[in-house]
Image (cartoon, rainbow, N blue to C red; front, side):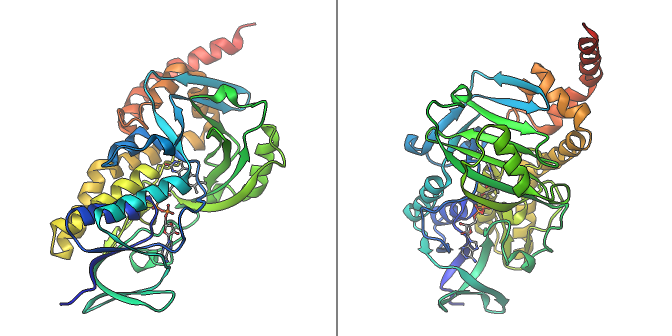
Length: 386
Ligand SMILES: Cc1cc2nc3c(=O)[nH]c(=O)nc-3n(C[C@H](O)[C@H](O)[C@H](O)COP(=O)(O)OP(=O)(O)OC[C@H]3O[C@@H](n4cnc5c(N)ncnc54)[C@H](O)[C@@H]3O)c2cc1C
């Protein structure tokens, strides 16, 4: 059967570029379709965790690193807690630069890139027919859909997420002010609980600008634009945000179908995002790679699907299920549980090992739950002190 390419990857975000690079390095002919010329702005906080970096099969060049983070400052109501580790937990990157770098790495490995939107995708007896917006058509054997949370191609594999399966974020940028009111955030990510339903607000200091945003669960966060306005006013940045954009974000940890026939989903299209704190870059990169490996390692589609489900489950999906449990507990009873995170140094400090991938959510919960009565008793005692 004459295919134009063995595999088509739709979407040149972190999932798509990582999949294309992995396939090209395995000697598979692969074409990557990306609808936007790069570099392009991508609405995102840009926090790239150590776990995410550990998945890259090359050294992250220093010039794409805006800021290095060793800890977090978390605020809930009138309480704020700062906790730093000796080791770095994440770096902040600007997505326009980071995503371009990943596409360049896919090109370097031998992938071909078509800078056009895919307009249609049809599975037939002769493989998958991919048509671009300009009418060019390609026939491929397999296809990985990495076109983000909003992709029109997701329903080729599974139903779209409803209001309980998806979050909504709004983010904008503010040029660094002088004097810098956020200079004290050096080395920290800054999180504000309570400003978004089932989510939070953030200020991520990128050196020359701040990424400021809010994100919450669609069902519990009806007015993100108003929430962002109130949040920016609260932190003294009213009227200063530019390039404000909203974007959906999947709620990870739900049981979703990952593929059908010759099609696989990866990254946000597959729903791989941490439901508690919204990290998606690590899972986008790794799921793209695992989808590529499932294709390389299996000529039969049923085995490809089984392999992909097994490897994603073993590496992070099971952890995302615990994160979903954790987020339900935290956000359903925030006064009880989020308070612990912003009142107890040990509870926050230990949580920071999660983005480091040194602690799973299950391990964190196993540690936290038996200690909760002690935390609460101490808190009641503190409140009773004159
Ligand atoms: C406001 C916000 C803040 C976030 N902050 C963080 C953070 O700080 N850290 C973190 O880890 N995660 C964060 N996330 C999540 C993270 O951005 C996503 O998980 C990640 O971008 C998913 O990567 P992806 O490659 O799956 O999809 P995307 O990054 O969405 O890439 C999809 C690509 O597909 C292209 N595309 C779409 N349709 C087509 C088509 N028909 N044809 C061709 N190309 C197409 C798009 O142009 C795009 O380049 C945030 C998300 C939001 C919304």
